[in-house]
Image 1 (cartoon, rainbow, N blue to C red):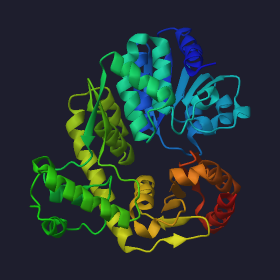
Image 2: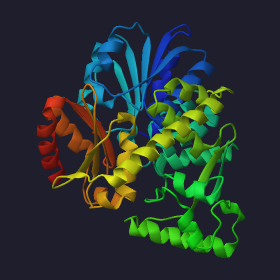
Image 3: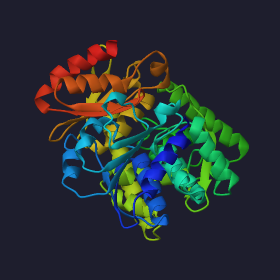
Length: 430
């Protein structure tokens, strides 16, 4: 069976309900989760159904809280695979639209489980939560092809490839005139100085003041990148490439394919805004952005810049600090849990002290210890699976965890930190 066929069964379940039914939509708190929940919400509204939407963190009591509600149907999107067994207590039919690894033996009779992984797709690269939500939306009505724009934002937010089902979505969106691709430089900013000091992808170390670096190249710091002639542009990019190689970053590309949506503009920027909204507890604003609320764009730009500024501040702190190291991983502590994942990823790729061929973990103290981890493609090809390692280690100490081979997270009791770290080291050894 193909993913689209499975989505059709889920669509049939919805269509079997009266229009007055109460449909609950629950998405995950990241760019992909907001995009996927919005796709479902828009398609429900177009089909004439009422819905109540919320964006949730992965937490141990999530299903117990939802049990208290009265719903006719619950749709989980980009979340739910870790709660399948508990969903038998929800008292209504459930649709789970997901792409994460799960135990298929735990699926109760009231749950229709539509996971990209069950249909020959790599849920880490070829189909994200928004991709599966898009399959559901298209099964409801093929006029929902415009939602390909949000699906692509989800792919970008989840750092997936344009391959497999993702590629089909992009081709459908482009074929119908809702999506276009453009080859552009990745560097943006009002001046070269600002561009280099504020850049996160790529991140440049020691650029607290980038003016001396530019002046040494004979380039005026306040010049815009677009204003450089071909010779100076090549000179600048060569110098920056060398700097990144010295930082331990071997994968350097200055131009890439950007996707633009007819209704949303730059979909990479949309994904960035959705991610910022998710991380700074503004998920409702992210939903409004997807629903094309006119006022949401200006507010989202403010949230996006605040988020980026917080990341820059924390990265500069990480430049100064020495990380902790175990046999099979490197880790550090961060005060702000919402920043943990992105900091782990940036540190792994751009900070020399973290470039030891090991995955990087970020730990944050809250009611429990929040854990976020990132690896790279080379580690995964060699057999690393962060999602499985964190899941086993966290559950062994009374916590929860999971995710993808290259990016994963979890929560553990504070008093179990050392035990967890030892178990994690053993799991990663495998």
